Amino acid sequence: MGGGLLVAGTTSDAGKSVVTAGICRWLVRKGVKVAPFKAQNMSLNSFVTREGAEIGRAQAMQAAAARVEPSALMNPVLLKPGSDRSSQVVLLGKPVGELSARGYFGGPGGSDGPGGSSGASLYGGRREALLGTVTECLEELRRTHDAVICEGAGSPAEINLRRTDIVNMGIARAARLPVVVVGDIDRGGVFASFFGTTALLSREDQAHIAGYMVNKFRGDVTLLEPGLAMLRDLTGRPTVGVLPFAHGLGIDEEDGLRVSMRGAVRESVVAPPHGADVLRVAVCAVPLMSNFTDVDALAAEPGVIVRFVDRPEELADADLVIVPGTRGTVKALAWLRERGLADAIARRAAEGRPVLGICGGYQLLGERIEDDVESRAGTVEGLGLLPVRVRFAREKTLARPVGEALGERVEGYEIHHGVAEVTGGDEAFISDGQGRSLDGCRVGSVWGTHWHGSLESDGFRRAFLRRVADAAGRAFVPAPDTSFAALREEQLDRLGDLIERHADTDALLRLIEGGVPAGLPFVPPGAPAHPADAPAGERPAVPAQPSDGAADTTVNAAASDTPDQSHSFEALEGGTR
Image (cartoon, rainbow, N blue to C red):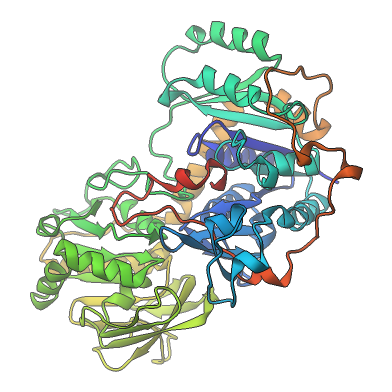
C-alpha cells in the first residue's frame, strides 16, 4: 500500500486544491508515482475522463499535476448544485439522482429526482454509507501508486456534521492518514484558525492532525516565525510550510466564481496584442454557471481581455459575448431576460456582432427547450437566435469527442442532459472532417456548441478569434505560438516550485511515507464524542456501496440567482468543498 497524506483547510478556498496539486507536481518530479484524491466535491466545474466518468475539474487539474490520467477513483462523489434546495449527485462518475440537503445530511426532506422516488425514504440521510465506497477507491489508488495526496473539503471542524463526514477526518481515520491543515493568512486570523480547528476536533481526530501550512503569505517570513513557534508550543504540532502569495496561478477553480464579476479572469496579466487591436470578451455571469474555465484559454491569448458581466450596458464594447454553461438552463434564460441581457444579445445578433453559446448557453440561444428533467418547467421558448430545439433527456451525455472546425482539429468534452435538434443554419459548428455535422451550428455571427474545452485547441482558437475579429472590425491578430497546454504546464510547475522552495519537504515525505506520527498531544476542549469515535468493533457496519435508494441523491446547492456564485456554497457545509 502506497503512502498518503490528507490536505485539509481551515476554511473553504484556503488553498487546499493548490497545495494538493503542488505536492503532486513536486513528488512526480522526484520520480514518485503519485495520484490525487478527493472523496467528495461540490463543484459546477467538472470534467469527463477517458472512460466517460464525470469528476471535478480540480481533481482533473491535480491529475495533470501528477502526470497521470484522471479517473473516477480520484473523485468518487461529486455534488452539482442545480437549485437553492437540491444538487445532482454523481457517484463514481455517473449521475444517480437528486436529494435535498436535509435528506443528504440527515432527517426527512428528500426530494424526488430523475432517479425515482423520495430520497428521504430511500437514502435516509445516511451519507456515511458512502464511506466504504470512497475508502475502497482510495485503497485502489494506494495499491497502484507510491503515494496518494488527498484533498479535504472546507473545514474538518464542522462539528455539526462530523458524524457523517466522508471527506475530512472521516476518510483520514478510515485510511489512517496524517493531516496537514492549510490556512489562508491573507484573510487574517490564521493562528486562531489553526488552533481553533484543532481544538474543536475530538481526541481521536486530533491524533491525525500532524502539522500546519500557511498559504498566501506576504512580507518578511521572519516576522511570522515567533507566531509559528507559539503555535507549536500551544498545539505540539509544527508548521511545515509558509507559501508566499503568488499572482496569476490560473488553476482550474473547484467551485464558486472566485473573480470579480467586472474584473479580469483570475489574476491573469493581459499581454500586449500581437496586432494593432485588442479583443474584448464579455462572459454573461449566468446563475449556476458551470465550467467557466472554458474561457481561460481566451484569457491566455495576448491581447484578449476577458471579463464577466451582469448588465446589458457592459456588452456595448464587447467584440465577443459568450453565454457559458449552466446547471440551470431555464433559470439562466429567465435571468438573462430579467436583466435585459437577452434583448442586448438579440440586438448584437441582428447587427452581425459575434455571440458564442457553450452547452447550456447554446441551448438557450435556440428556439425551444423542453425540460422535464432539470427545471421541470416543460416547454420554454428560447432566444431564437439559432435553429435549435432542445429536449432534456434523463440520461446525461458524458463524452470526450474529437472533430474539426474552421479547418482545425478540435478536442472537447460533453456534460449535458439536453439533446439538440438542429433544423437549419448556415453550417455546423463542429464536423467530422468529412462534411458530417458532429455538434452545434452557426447563423451569421452566432455560434453554439455543447463542447466544453474546445477553445483549448490552439489552432481552432486562433481561427475562431480571427473570425471574431473580422466580424467585429478589429485589427486583432492571434499570436502564432500561444500553447494553452504549455501555459498550463508552466502553472503546474509553479505550484511544484512553491512546495519545493517554501515547504518543509523532508517533513512532508516523512508524513507521506511514515503515516500518522505517534504521541501528538491533545488540545482541549475537543469535540464531544459521537458514534464515529467508537472503536471499530463497536461501530455499526458501513456498507461498501450505497443501497439502491442512493439512486436518488442530492444536496442543497445553496446557490442563488445573483451573479456572484462563490458566496453561499459554504452555507450548506464547509465540508462540501
